[in-house]
Image (cartoon, rainbow over all chains, first blue to last red; front, top):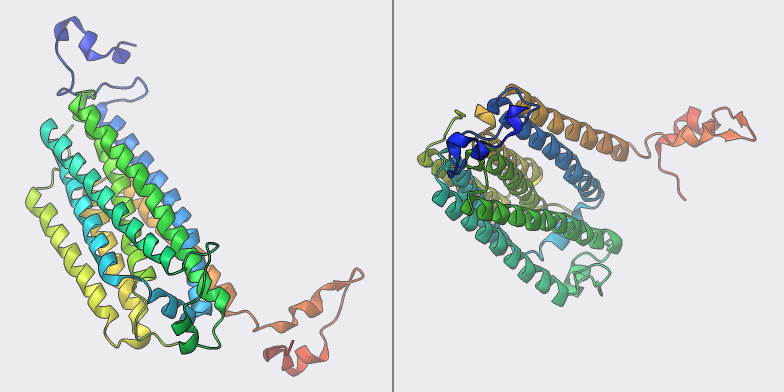
Length: 242
Length: 125
């Protein structure tokens, strides 16, 4: 049972922090390497359930876009492509800072950890801010389903025989997909800030390498989801046939 | 713990490649690619996702069982999407299936419309 005793209570380490040392080993693990690998694999397994979670929405999107390509192309042209591109750049940049944060954790550089993690949270918040601007525009243009949704008159002129329900379905899927993505991002920002605070307080053992690595996996996954959502929702070609 | 530490330079290079691919995706949107438009957009997105998985998420240097988890989840997502499309694309191909539904507990025989091939056209109703 001696492995359960934190090293800082070991007489040889009294008065010293165990932040920079090997991680405290849980009694159920053979060694710190196995402990690290189990956490990483646990996160990958969670992410595989997330792939199915978003996969259900992407499946619904695939079916409705297949059944009504014209309506989807028209509806998607109200999205702000440059603003979406800007948001993609912001999220890719946040992935870069997160990767550098994980790198700093591997090197036990705690000032760099805090710096990169806070930068990551700032980029994430920027993304949410731009998303809020886009949602506001949609609200003004009556494009939010169940909140006074109206098919714009110019689209009805372009396609008089359109299925109005399918046109609205694009926006139902748009708000569900980007909304679910935004909820994940809010959770991610919270996680990153908690990790930054705990690193600043030297709360971890082993510089929190495992914990920050796992947080990073979650963050990069949110980025990957957006990499697919952007072309699916914003970039239905101007040349798409109806 | 000794883990593979990626140099800052590699991280930045991956980021730049991701940006280039993003602008390639946007550029392809305004090209007259016709039916190829959607596959091209998805191809670029997949390359970006693979780069993030491999380098930012360290999957390249990760244990083999993590790779199995990722490949398996996308395989099952693929099965989901393929069977969705299998269902929706083939609707209306076999109108005759209602002819086999039990009426008062007895399965009825195929009607004339199924044997003449009239079932291959859509019902008027």
